[in-house]
Image (cartoon, rainbow, N blue to C red; front, side, top):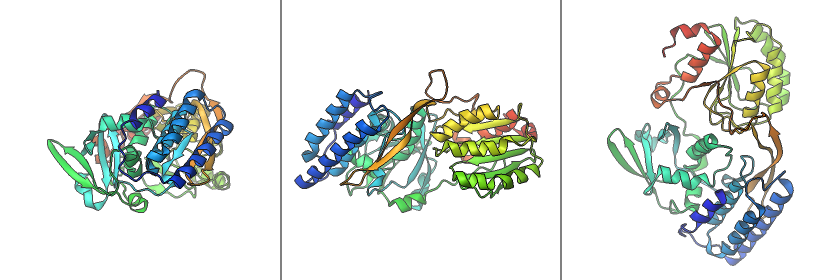
Length: 416
């Protein structure tokens, strides 16, 4: 299906940029041949979804079209072919080359795509629903970009990747949505008011500084530094140890800090345990297992009914794997939204760069069937969807529900 979508959309991509020169087209053809060889020799099972005949046909079509394409159009097509391989660890990283972003952070709430952050120039748009870009509505953009997005295992990771990659000017230009060196028209809605804004992309450095201001206010969180990059600890209501696990530290750092962490927990009054994997796109699940081994030896926690794991569509790769492993190790309930990672999928990454353009890619080199039944995600025991009004008010309904589930005293003051 993805390959058919690629073939459909490329027929309608207008060429707004200069086509590749003969010499540059030859270099890209060499890169594509190199790419093809890597796919067929390094991926553990490259044609599990896309038949080899279709893959070869798409590669041949791309090579023949090179003299008519701009570089960014060639990249978009190669990105689409890679996405059609059909697993979230086989990816073309378009951002490994020069690129810019539109200065927004976006997030779906139900079926509405909301601007949750912007650069100062567009701060009046924060909280607005994005309706269209250059006359193409969000639903059409979702269908278009869906066949190109990297890091997709299921519909949940597709949604969160879309939220991010819709800001990547280079990809939109490669798909004919925007025009090089021209501002794009963003149409937004707040209540009944429709606003048309012409927006120019910014550097990656400037984009990285765009962060939303809707921090968690309820419950109150006072984080402590535990010297593990990507993991923070807070004690809630004195009886719950809450770990926000957004990135993976080094394995050796987990080992080195384990005794200190256990002493800190032992000296607390915490008997409940919550580990939050929301926003965690993965790393080494062996590091996660080392972390679980450190905690599992502590007798103070209620290992029968006092542990919970929090997930969302960003929970991917090793984070998704650790959620499944921790559920067993800690006898934990999973609370939140379905994971973006498929528990039975191709995984781990062989990374390489194309010899001429330097663009980077990854290919899956392992297959992990973590559960027996056929599924596409780890589904929570308790589903809690985040609503826009809760998000903007700083109310973390997922964490509040987790406190109820584990029996924290905070549950007595949590409203429904």
